[in-house]
Length: 246
Image (tube, rainbow, N blue to C red; front, side, top):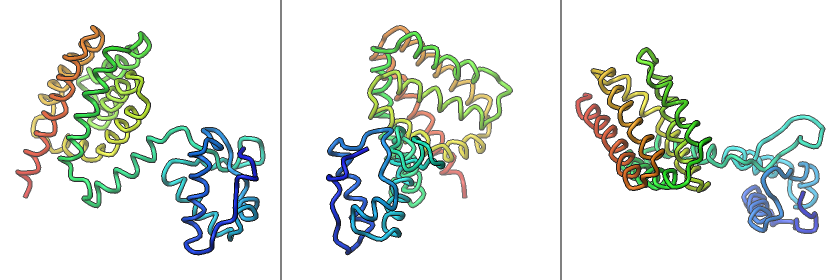
């Protein structure tokens, strides 16, 4: 836990935002790391010279952002703990902005294609046997022709996430995971509206297997080209569906 001397009282205007700023300062300074606990609410109230309501509001914001996890109980692992999964916070942020139309789908597709192209190239260069096994598992499950749409989409996501993680760039992987999860509902809606799902699913399977083969062969250029074409091709299908919908 951070040294209590590093916590200083904050001015009372916009108090909860200033509490957020103090906690962010501790994280940026390296005084708080993943797995560390924040001081208890009562102690933060005293250290920062603010109300308990301001501290609770700041903690709620950080939990919503995926920065904190609350653990109930009285043991050493209880309390507000710095989280190790920033992709969850990024996912929530992207999903809300997309719902509010701040991020047009075309922008999200462009970002996803750029990110996943880089991730696939890195995966082709760095993937271990364990990484390849994590890709094969959802790939094999998607080969089941009787698989429900929702299950297919979930395994599809796991396949792309496994590629991002195999690249070894944590920030790029978290951003890729967040973008993919943020468009989950959009993809599911498109799946349900496709006139011939079985044909599209067969094409997606073939594209997935070709991408996996390129990564397993260490062919970074081909892996990057394939994943970008895969993403852009499917989203073109979505745009065609949207254009036909009254």
